[in-house]
Image 1 (tube, rainbow, N blue to C red):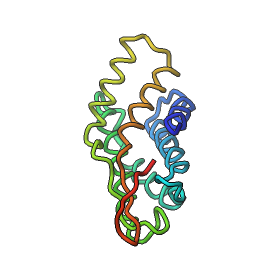
Image 2: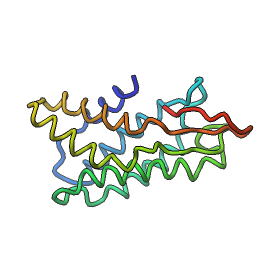
Image 3: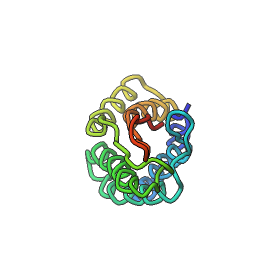
Length: 161
């Protein structure tokens, strides 16, 4: 399951006392997820250059996440920026060969609230780091579902991830 890819990426993150290191951990985890993602029907995975460019946008958008209370919104900003790059690159077929429109999931604006509520639930349940990361990964993975790709030949669209 691809949520396990994201959970693994978050679990590999070392506790960071510096913001760039923490943001890089998030960048790596989401890049790993999209590097293994496919669209429905087994079409090609997201092309590496698109993932790399999207990861750079994610990194830039998450700057400032270490400010008190900023992390949930910055995580949302980063993931939204990541999808924004996929959307902008789609017409050149640089995301999925043969697919020219990428539509992001409609749940992107809910990620900050989702991260906050998931963190509160993890803390209330007394979860260890691995279990808390898995819970967060499942939530973020779910929020990334619903993205669509439209082929050059026109509809039908297919689900991404």
